[in-house]
Image 1 (cartoon, rainbow, N blue to C red):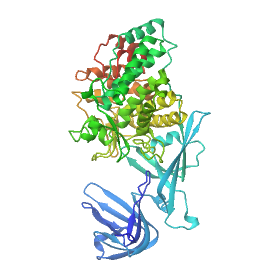
Image 2 (image 1 turned 90 degrees about the horizontal axis):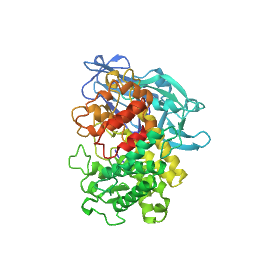
Image 3 (image 1 turned 90 degrees about the vertical axis):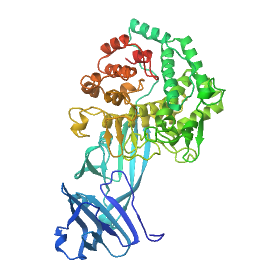
Image 4 (image 1 turned 60 degrees about the vertical axis):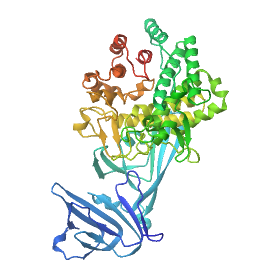
Length: 576
């Protein structure tokens, strides 16, 4: 293979075929080790001489193992001559030949073989009148046969979340015969069309919930809890821990402002400003030995921590990796999402802090660009670092190679990341950032409700044996799992649910689907043993509040610390 003799394999989400484009080559297809090649186009291969000839535009192989049979069909635009034996088939030299392969196909695969995707584009239009965004996929297609009569619209698999948001006016048809049974998305079917139009709802996003329905007694309880909170200077020991702790203060600041507790709000605001200025190295840190400075990393274009760059790797795979893998871009959406949430709270309370310091502005916007940059023209940051706008959710893992592929464990922290970005846009009165944040946020929540929050009684996404646990806590490119990366203690349910519920903020009410909580709280989550992780009991109480505010309020009043380092009694009572 050289510059003139080569093959291309366009990898495009949703294609029912694998497509290979051969240039100046003699294509050779061989069977994998293990299964035997039983027949070709219905002819028993063992009964044929070595090198027998077959002319077809749909070469069908039947492979057999002790457990199963598999049908694979290799499509070409017209009939070609194949020379076959027990190991495989080859065709003569071709200047250009496209071969499309399908597993267990139907006759409908043959009808749509000619049009193949080589890529696609995404376009977004914000519809302010109905609070939505039009999310359009435009598939770039080519044709095996350029005859006008053969130029059909492309067949592509749509996933369950796509069907939830397809526009009523979109010109798509579902072909029920081009389908596949999957372990990660249930039964999927092809839709026919070069253009997909989806309408994604964009709710108004705010820092706080309404408190109009609180009784005077409930208001008093929340304010009293607020007055007991501690808010000391926070050192940046690592981006994730700092982020969680500063976001906790951000929540308290929002609450104090809403309840007009101005002295508390001013004190929290001052503490947060100093903590951020030290973390950004704008002023000398109070604890220099604990200050894990942030740097711009130029190879991949992003903001990474010093310790993360010095000791890179995936935290639960490489062993010695620092800062939860920040140096290989692992979990940036989690880490900096907390920072953005806290920064948005401070700026919302005191815009002058941001407006008066250009260095601070650049540093804050760098974090926003690290996880939410919308532009392909930005020379310093990649576009939407973690976000996948086909599957709708993010892939939080960085550059460490993991056998099951890219993955995301805590979809709630990804939701929080885009919530923080959205709030920053609101605080800065940056309409573009606000709308981009809302799109990323809304699609992440749709994915959470579709692929993480499982119906334990009957799932259309996962096998029932798996879905009965109610939570797909880790979703990989090739599997889902009811497990976590970090040490959990005796009951993994505590962690699988908790890590996909935290942190508790106003957006949590939108993330946690009430019907799902009704099906999982009493029978699964409330039965978990919290002895080894009792600081996460607060998340269970918050989950309970989705379906029973009165009982969860009593539980919160009767629960005493410890709390997770990003949470507190005031946050919990306010959420309920």
